[in-house]
Length: 119
Image (cartoon, rainbow, N blue to C red):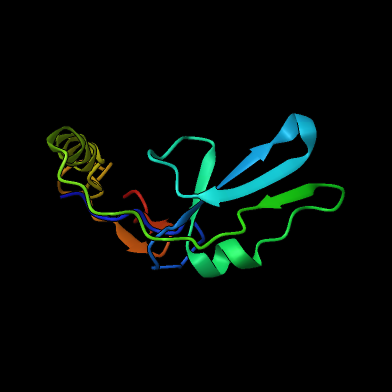
């Protein structure tokens, strides 16, 4: 079973129940039920964020009138496999490698590097 999609708003841990799509050519923002798949140019929103969203000045906002229900869990093996592959493909942060010769003393303070004077 895949994990539920989360709200796209920064810091929001809630489960997504709606999808926000922009139609730039019509200056329209559309908030509807959660799309079946996450798309690159859409945003998943939890119910409070979907209900309180406002459109930019001069834009029209089209909002779904019904309830935003969470999606039912899926046991689709192909979807679960794709999620596992995406998770495994995420880059792992690497430890910073020293860029000085062995035996040379350097110190670090924040983003600055202290290099001892040449003898």
